[in-house]
Length: 351
Ligand SMILES: Nc1ncnc2c1ncn2[C@@H]1O[C@H](COP(=O)(O)OP(=O)(O)OP(=O)(O)O)[C@@H](O)[C@H]1O
Image (tube, rainbow, N blue to C red; front, side, top):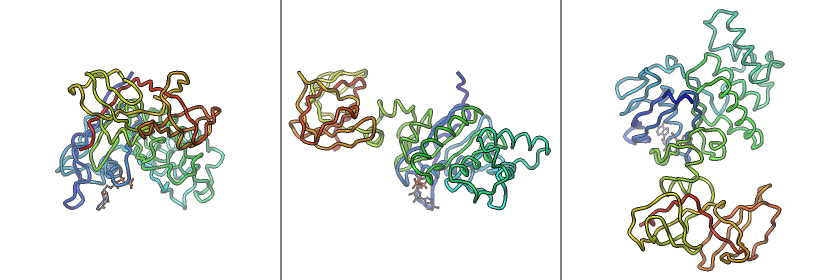
């Protein structure tokens, strides 16, 4: 497995006027990896992407690509010299150029034969050979976005930046194109960073995801770890479903809750009897008709193969659970449940 670092973002800060919108953000992108910057609106995702692309100066920190310095507080390599491609939300195709010529746009200095080879192989890759002569207004949104991807890949960039590229598309197409673009990037081996505020999209697209909040990177990790091992309350609440259940520490490994004593794969150094909140994901809750704790269905959200239930425990605390949708319970039903928590994640209560 290749683990060479391609992009190194080291403790960067960016400001608009006197307001810092990125502060101490650090992460590495390995060669061939596809990463996502995720977070709520205004957290600084686009600013981070613009800093990597060379459109946003740094007030401190450094960005390097391989051995090449891209930016620090006193230097900013021109965007066109960075070997970084960009795909935008609005496609930004040239309306007066055909699909083929849009793709050709960034490689016009190469010999014609080479240009033709690249355009043909990219048309093949995005499966649009048959419409190479069409103009952008004759294409669907998904086709336009595929052309934008091919155009960005034509100069063979070392890194591709994608800024909410699927957000103008309807849900089905979005999901489909997300996977298709991931497959294409993996096939050509191009490293990429996708900016999105949609965690499902990030989970499906990214080998690694960075979650930003108020200009600070909360966690840079695999989708699995962000979901199962969130490093703080913000990550726990932002990522995935589920919630925090009050409990009391027994010792380093065990926490007593209304759903029984929970143990997991990590230890905490809190003294016994410290009040804590335990993360309970929907997949941590299972039915136990004979020995489970009684709960009442207070809400249900059908999502096709599974239904997400909100269950109220005797003290009034709520937990969520995801059951296959052929078990169809109604609001008001009583379900006996137990917790099967593998990753014991707990936080001190908010002050
Ligand atoms: N040109 C600008 N001048 C001043 N403030 C700006 C400018 N661009 C962005 N900001 C502010 O910087 C912060 C980060 O903006 P940014 O666009 O990076 O966030 P984002 O996470 O990409 O948001 P969104 O998901 O809504 O696009 C926000 O508070 C925003 O209002």
